Image 1 (cartoon, rainbow, N blue to C red):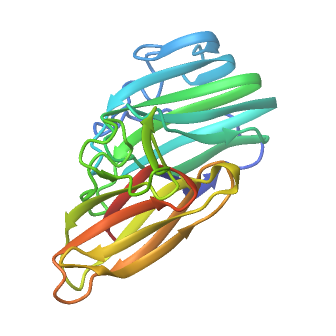
Image 2: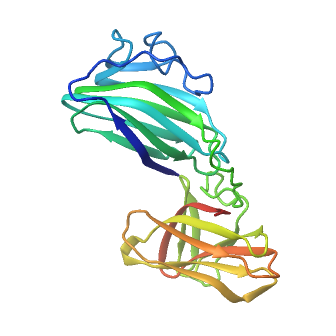
Length: 282
C-alpha cells in the first residue's frame, strides 16, 4: 500500500471560510462535503459538523467504502489545523487491517491536499477516519476517487498478505530445525524454511516486486526469482536483512526472453518475517 502527497494549494493568508462545492458523483465517500452534517459518518467523541465541515476536537468520524484491490485511488480534501490541533486522516484497508496515516498536526489554514492510495492485495473495503485529539482538526470536501489516470495493474501474487495462511503458497522445511508458520497475516520462515509461488509473466516486460520484511534477533533472509523451467539459476536475489520492525523492499525486474513463468521464493536463512508480497507490471 502506498500513500503520498502529490500536490497541494493554499488559500490566501487569513482566509478561513471554505467555499461550498457540489458533491462529486464519483466520490466513494457519501456526504464528503458535510452539507448533510453527520449523515453517513460514524461519529465517536466530540466532533462538530455545525459549520458544514468536520471539526474533530477529541473524537473521530469514519466511513467504510468498498474497494477494488486492483485499482488505484486518489484521496482529496481540504484541511485546517488551528489551536494547536493534533490529529490525522487514516485509511484502514480490510481485511488486513493495514493503516496509512496522513498526519494533521501542524498549524495551517484551509489547504487543498491530494494523496495516492494503492490498496494492498486482497483488500475488499477501506475505512476513512478523521481523528482529532486536541485543538481543532478540520476537514472538508473529502473525496475518495478511482484514479483513472493510472492504468490498473493486476496483482500476480495470490494471498500475498497471508490472510489465508499458506493458501496458494508451497511451503518447504528442508532441515530438521527449519520452520515456517503463519500467524495473524504474517509468515515466519526460519533456519532454511521457505515459501514460493509460481506466476505467469510476459517476456521482456518489467515488473515491480515488493514485500515487507522484518528480522527478529538480527536474522536475515532472501527473496529470489527463478525461471520455473530452470530453477537452478537465480535471476534476482534480494538480501532481506534489517531491524525487527517491518521494512519495505522493492525491485524492478525485466523478464528475460523465453521466460514464461517465474518462481517467487522467500527463504529465512536465519530468522525472517514476511508480509504484503506483491508482483505487478511496473
